[in-house]
Length: 168
Image (cartoon, rainbow, N blue to C red; front, side, top):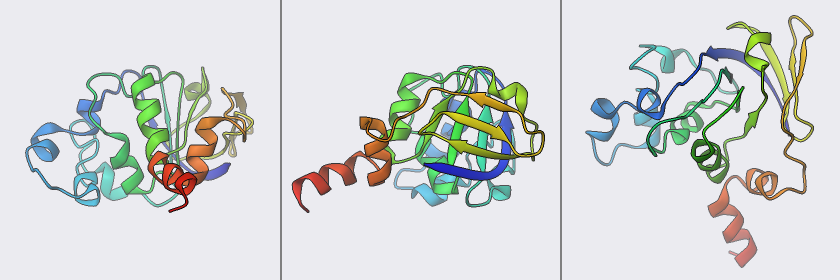
């Protein structure tokens, strides 16, 4: 799976409380993912969600998605983010993203190779992360095509994979 797009850059320790602010999202039961996504990152980057375009890429620092077990990955998917790459990532966020069909890649040191607005090419099967402006290449932790996470992503999420396997 290969993705190309504009880079949004985030720093270290961006937690799920910042991604999915409780006052705007959790306080409104029944809010659709599309509606909730309008508030994504509003606690630390007001107005960011309105600027995101389908296919954009997030490059982040260490410990992306730390904090509580809020299902924040779904907001990024609803915004149209194509892939999230981070120096390191909470395993809970990583699995939540994979399970809903949002590609993620761990690539130690990659955040130093990008500035916001750069163009990136991400190959999650090989783990290659390339800055199309500077030409810098980083090597992430590949998700081989035959790996269970890659199978889940190709199906569009764990629920879809289970339905496909059941013949639904």
